[in-house]
Figure 1 (cartoon, rainbow, N blue to C red):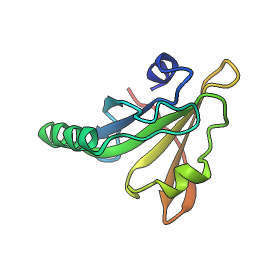
Figure 2 (cartoon, rainbow, N blue to C red; figure 1 turned 90 degrees about the vertical axis):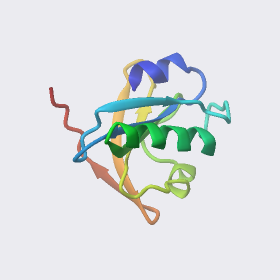
Figure 3 (spheres, helix red, strand yellow; figure 1 turned 180 degrees about the vertical axis):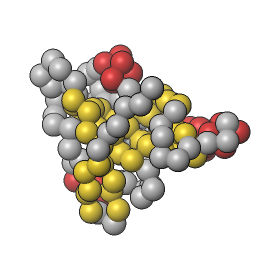
Amino acid sequence: MIHHCKEELPMEACGLLSGNNRKCETLWKMKNVKQNTHSFEISQKEIDKAFHSIEKKGQTLTGIYHSHPTGAPYPSHQDIVNAHYPKAAYFIISLVPNIPQVKCFRIIKNRVISIEIKVVN
């Protein structure tokens, strides 16, 4: 995720994560159709294509990620309003100052809940 976010600078990067049992196993880089430094949007066509591929792998959507190139790793008002997948974990990667920070949240009915990230081998 961090590598993808750095590749897209200065724009916000975005993508999906899939797997099973709340484990994120596969990363799907998505195109930010807004090409913006402060927001992102993924086309419905690209989402549908990714969901089809995720299903073919026998996985489910486990997470959605995007970067905040110049901001903190916390959901903005726009992030909260546009969180349409309550079962997904929302990862936000801050690239400020030079050490990336990754935070994870559940966003359910405009309520933000911080969740722990556990890295396993």
